[in-house]
Image (cartoon, rainbow, N blue to C red; front, side):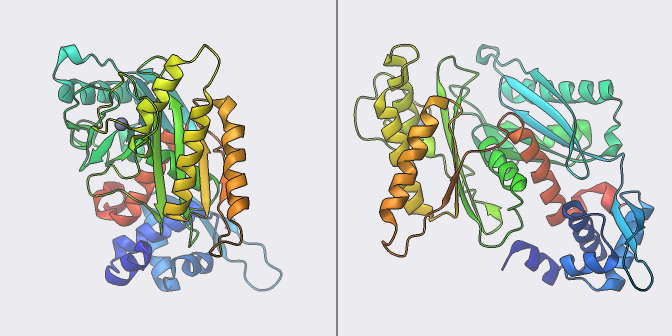
Length: 391
Ligand SMILES: [Zn+2]
């Protein structure tokens, strides 16, 4: 059962209905009561009641009447202005803060940075503190009040669990850094934390209008230049299946960059992941040994092979390949994959995924964080005070 269906079936309270109606208008508005009833599978009296309360609390407004040839023209409803979502990309040391309107259109964003020096110790305390100060400063400068923000999402590198994260690709011995709790306490905004690569995938699927599409299995592999460590590359991955991102038991599923490469020399480079022969160190070793501007053939081969394995493993309908770290590799790798798909046609009824490159890489994580926050409201509406307040 789709998570959305189970929600409707087992918890039919007014609050959940309001969240469903709000969610529906976020995807498609302006819309009539009948249209909202159709997309939410709620009755028209239930939708009418939910819309009336959403109007009272200011999240929804009337948007004129629907033009139709016969009969009374029904009222159209849409999302109000003046309320926002916050999407934060905590790339470490880079930080991006972005404000989106209720239709998830970008309103304002700012590039900033947080100071991280492991020698200082106590990163668990000063990192969240630094993020809080930057967010407060940004909102103040934009003249946006905290009470107008419905929720915020934060994308972070590494393992994410229960609102804490371990940025093992940024810090040598990262502790579990709490983020959700301090942010909610100091900013008073419902907060969700997600892995940055997972959020990039969410943003890409949203851009392609595939988030609500049934049967989508998407696999994403990203190789990005690391800003924290010069001349190195981070390789991450994410899988979307049945409407959700696969998380794994410890919040670190689909770290494709840390899967094994048995061939060749891994050199002196050691990865904090604990796998002595991981893909990420192999690629970094090959790059560091190559003459400037030249990329070794082995990197193309190893990335192409990894993508072939992912096609077998997940049988995706969509394969997204983000080789921002090596733009010159993008076409040989994509060519290799397409040849492989061609070769497998006719074997085991194989049809092959659509292979694409992502649209916006720069803002993808912040946008994905905003989307995650929006999705969380639909599942846990009781955590969002604006929605549950009395008018
Ligand atoms: Zn590793």
